[in-house]
Length: 148
Image 1 (cartoon, rainbow, N blue to C red):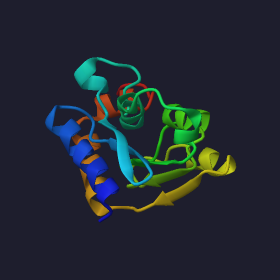
Image 2: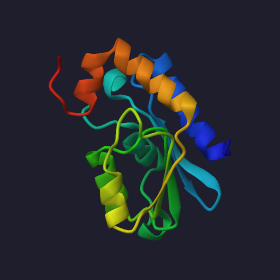
Image 3: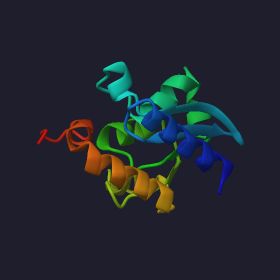
Image 4: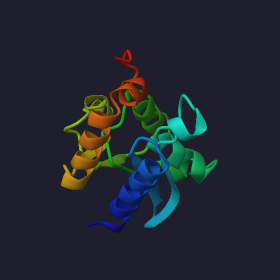
């Protein structure tokens, strides 16, 4: 398993252990992790702290050239909000753990020339399926759907 994807998965598990949604992400520039995070919407009572957003936040302010030379790893297909941040900062490549439990805005990323790699990692799939089955209300809230 790629070391960067492995860290994104570690971040997802960390979120789960904290009582949050198991999605993790890392931002990598020149072979170094410059930001990592996990979904903290529940933990921080936040409306925006998805895994990718948390990873970008942890990277801090960067020059535009840094983002344009970076890769973002995420355990789940990016939602429209996270896709927007990826496009805004011109991140050219996204490595996705899985898109079976949720297909985000991958088509939009590709439409804008972003390289999208989907691993369909079984551990990510099982982690999300288990969470969604046990926590449908929190999951629906996270993706902007009406709570059941």
